[in-house]
Image (tube, rainbow, N blue to C red; front, side, top):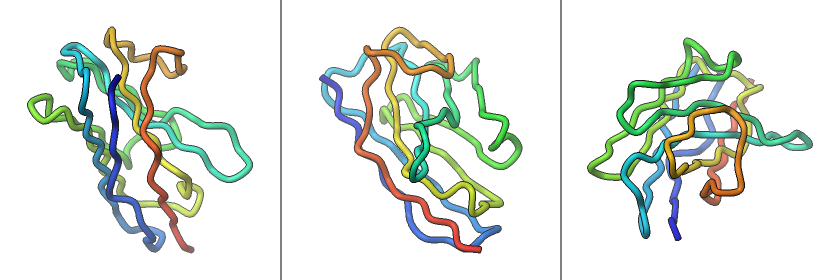
Length: 124
């Protein structure tokens, strides 16, 4: 099993910034992709960003391109999400995902691991 712990969520005004972190522990595998999804109240969980193990492949949802940046530190099994120019519509619970096999597509799979989520609230 892989355990994921997110941190860094909170309340911020529109236009502000937050940095989320997610650390993986347990039976971690080298060569695994890591990324972020989010779920707003009453909505489906949606893809935000993903980064491959070596960092050669990175994808962002159109809604966050140019504002969010995903990075990772493989030595620490940690992925980060720097969120700038936040908007009220970014308000959601943000979930970290860990993907053995280095999958970087936007669709979840049964083999993915998930964190418990961290709340991000952007006030207008």
